[in-house]
Image 1 (cartoon, each protein chain N blue to C red):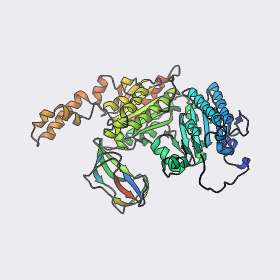
Image 2: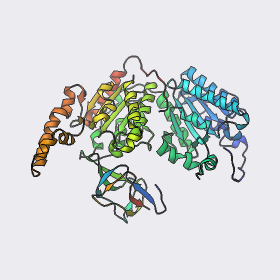
Image 3: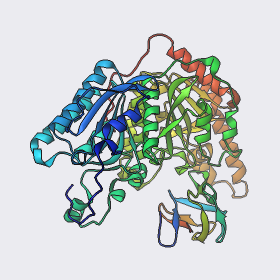
Image 4: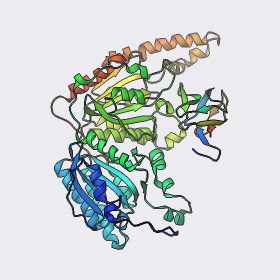
Length: 477
Length: 75
């Protein structure tokens, strides 16, 4: 970034009192008195350490924003590479705290080369150890792509992620934009999908980073005896046509207060949540009918695909909660690549090695039925609630196509009755949960009040024996 | 989306307006329902994520709204 407008000179605090001091930030991240530096506390612009996070051995590094605004030179980049080598050798989660204007201009191409070595190290570690980024200040240029290559990105309120800053944008495109609108919580939380978790303060950002390191790095054992049933049906409205917010249902499936939702505001028609069941880490993917009716679209398919691949890479089993009317129709979606981006979700589930259990609560229609971890994609077990609909489309819509000619000849006053009769007949032979059980795409119809233990039991059974995880990286889809 | 007059609540998708719940002058808390839309054969409540007084409701029952159309303004 280059400053062209006059700004007041920042107040310069002594380094040991500066809240941006990486020693201060890293020691706040780790459990108290557990941090050990693994690189020298010097002027490289980066600092790395090991320590415990909720008791789990973790590696972390932090930009030193007290030196040249955290700009990255070849020495600082070597610190990050060292941290990655340690994390991979130890099989430990790695957390990066970012506050950097990008590559050090004075070093020229040497700094670019060094930043590239970080990207290489991150990519080689992808899928091997959980990588969490916490962006606490500007993360520009090379410092933007660092977090972007990792599994989860947390943004503090002062975090700003962009490739080119407002001054360059203004001089090149004439757009007048400030750092917050260019790369702050609103654009990255809601629009771009760059950020997974928005934090409202720096301590909150570090707290969420600690929770994630624990959820991914210390997954625990599933103890079915700990799992009590609750009536999950309470989370649904009486009318089958009424949309509802799926969050209470997801919270009800997970152990109390264990859920951490990723990408909460981006593509909110699907929710992706890490949490625990019976003490063990799980990932929950759920359609959210309150947003876009719960339809799958290009963004939500991509969001879910990335989450599924992350869970698979780290051996986190999944629960897939299905209530989906289909793919969102429209020119916008087709041109937005719903075919290409929707295919990512099919690919993600089909290649998954970890146990993944599906629960159809109300309906699963069309291609979206397949994409939500159907039996055909290798679901470990498929449950459905009584009355669930699994079909190519809703019965009323289907019979209007199948019996178009017949219906055209029916007098208008009796048409509703004829349609209702045809729909119930169609449901009997083609939709309906009984038919799905008969052909083996649903294993078991389960009551909402008995679902939690059923899900936990199915996961526990599948998890017995050698732990499995997908043998692949986690490309930021 | 904030505008000079308040926060605009927009339709996320093509839909029919089934019913208007909030009228101009009503005070809403975050999470309250403004209108109910019908799309994909479902009734989808549109909630406000900000609190405030309903300044305008720009749709009527029976209207067809497009993605991005302003349904109401909360100030």
